[in-house]
Image 1 (cartoon, rainbow, N blue to C red):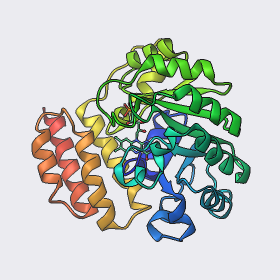
Image 2 (image 1 turned 120 degrees about the horizontal axis):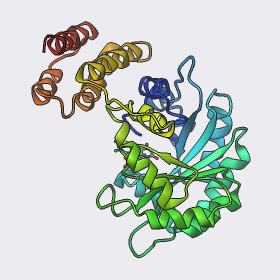
Image 3 (image 1 turned 135 degrees about the vertical axis):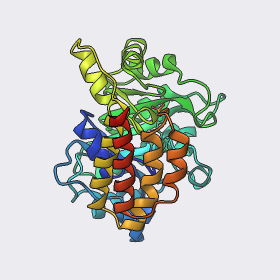
Length: 307
Ligand SMILES: Cc1cc2nc3c(=O)[nH]c(=O)nc-3n(C[C@H](O)[C@H](O)[C@H](O)COP(=O)(O)O)c2cc1C
């Protein structure tokens, strides 16, 4: 997720039992034109395993060159193609979910990556572009033809962005149409959602987006549910300690100013629903150094212990 799944957050989630992670989406053009900020997105953690790098673009030659020159020689486990981003800036360039309108284009874009990649290739799509173009099975077949090894399907159209509900029936149709594993995505935020998503779609796996923001514990929740164990949700103190660990990890990858700016929103997610959460979020906007953040979070932890 752009602006969310940086290397620190991926390490936090992997530490809590996530089986696969994806980088933020990385522009093929940005890589080819050697954009500094884009290349920064290719940072990997030391013991980071099972992470795919997600690339976006629409020009086959650019994609192939970005894969050959920038991605093959990295430690990422696989390369994922973004065909689901609904953002106007991306779609108006014919990239992200704009591709979904044309299954032939979906196939040729995916093939250009499969043919230039030394790693397994997966794709992430939506159910269609809009309600008049629900073509998820055509796109799944196009991706199968291109040689993609795994497909994640977000059960919304581009036009829906994040509104309404993910359509599980359409994901189930994608599962049926595909010869490779399909991962179901959309609105899973607890173990019960995970179970019903798997049951309703028959998907090989489930992808979690927003449900993990500020709650990397969700991966433990699901793992313990699968083992038939009772899950004890994290306390406020557990969440604050996780935030502290997250901040600690950010130190290794980002300069202080950038890390603190980005950590503010992470702390907002960690403290969502917590008593005094609004005041915490307000305070966080004023903090701009690692030591001040640490001091502040430790003071919150102390308050929790005093209760
Ligand atoms: C802030 C944000 C950033 C996202 N960035 C990406 C991205 O870079 N690549 C991608 O495939 N999906 C991205 N998504 C979409 C999510 O991966 C996911 O498909 C969507 O949120 C639905 O799943 P959820 O209900 O579990 O969140 C993003 C979503 C959010 C909220």
